[in-house]
Amino acid sequence: MAIIVNLDVMLAKRKMRLNDLADAVGITPQNLSILKTGKAKAVRFSTLEAICEHLDCQPGDILEYRDESEVED
Image 1 (cartoon, rainbow, N blue to C red):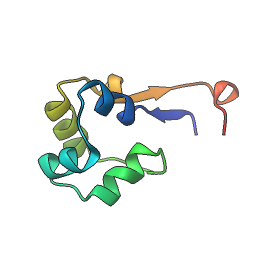
Image 2 (image 1 turned 90 degrees about the horizontal axis):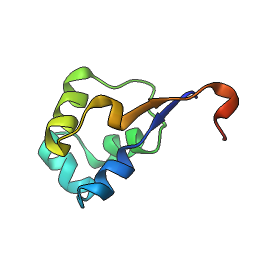
Image 3 (image 1 turned 90 degrees about the vertical axis):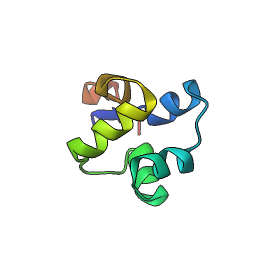
Image 4 (image 1 turned 30 degrees about the vertical axis):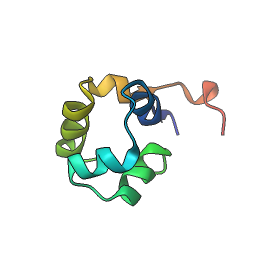
């Protein structure tokens, strides 16, 4: 997939655990983990907004587009 999820990078920069963010955003840790690993097929804007609010970042800090030829599986 050409959309790369950098949620783990943002969590590390903010020194925050996945479970803490899940609690703050109101999403299950399992669903947040699916998003973090790039296995999610969609994300609600309200969820993305809450994540960005709690991590004090922009959506572009979390989601990145790369050309298919650049993406390694």
